[in-house]
Amino acid sequence: MKKSMLGALGVCLFATGIASAHASGGKLLATGGVTSIEGAAGGGLTPWALLSSYAEEGEWGGTAAMSQANVSDFRLDLTAASVNYSNRIELSVAQQTFDLPEVIGGELEQTIYGAKYRVLGDVIYGNYPQVSVGVQYKENTRAALPTAVGSQRDSDYDVYVAASRAWLNGPFNRTWLANAAVRATRANEIGLLGFGGDLEDDHQWVAEVSAGVFLHRSLVVGAEYRQKPDNLSFASESDWTSVFVAWFPSKSLALTGAYVDLGEIAGLSGQDGLYLSLQGSF
Amino acid sequence: MKYLNGFIFVFVLALSAPAAKAESLYQQLGEQQGISALVEQMLFNIADDRRIRHHFEGSDLSRVHEMLTEQICDLSGGPCTYSGEDMETSHSGMGVTRSDFNALVENLQLAMDDLDVPTGTQNQLLALLAPMHHEIVE
Image (cartoon, rainbow over all chains, first blue to last red; front, side, top):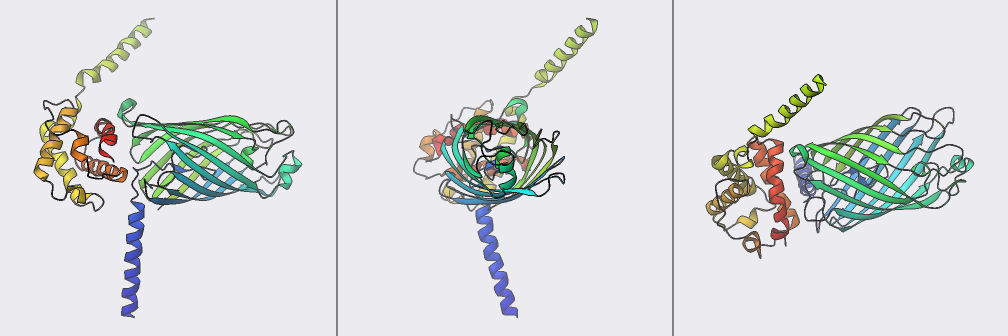
């Protein structure tokens, strides 16, 4: 009994040692961003050039996250995980479930496989912004409804280029962060309503921007804007915006809260509400 | 119009008041004494940090303390002239990684927290040190 308890204690200490060694990855606090709604490191609604976790050159890192957006008539749930090697390449997978209001009934689902490659630069150091390219392969697994409203296919890919830069001593002696991305996509409501439509069936370039200010190195507030295509004639699609606050109590944990305005979705306007996300890093 | 003039007056006053009181970074850091205490606390933190303390083994820590204090005094606008080697020379062959550099930044941040250095002052100092990244990291 005593021996097995000691053994268990030993395993615990060993595991804690590993966990703490991994949790103290070499990047600075918050430079892994948080898990965006498509699983890539970013803000809430958009991917940034930052790579997930705290893995620096030669290190491995990863994240796991759960998020929920509750707007007037819909609810989006996200479960996501990612790995990062050497702060060079990020691989992610995300599962989205989109609860529909009773008047429509049921739910929509998609799985998103993402890869992001840091091409150059660093968000903090050096003369260039951090620039990354990414691809997201999206598979809608509940395609009946999207097809019925005009979606042309149930899986597709997005590609994007993102740039991120922080100014350590910006206005008001605070650290500021800006991100800009362009994405080629033909997703309807980011893919939840399929890909391509009766109005437009080609990839289009859309812009995604965000900016934030660190009130303290563990607390950032900011806003995001995400442009979206409008491919389906049955209902118009809105650009998305958010105002967020993200708290990084340690390199192991990040909490994000946001007010999101998703405009009109599937003919139902005024879709705004709260977004919450919890991310663990190792 | 009267109100507008009044508003402009108050606005200009509001802008100029903090400027009149503005302290240099050197003063914000507590001058020679404050910077010396800050560097000392940072070196204590480093000595406890398994990630990077090996870089300081065999170093003359009192000289490291003296040189860093002088360098920060100089950078922050204090009455000092840094007399040590340039960053590239003093770190050549040490094999400082990107993670090591960040670990040092974290130790400095913790030291500034310990000494109640406000966020705005911390950011000013970090922004002065960040450009050394490419000279120190191999």
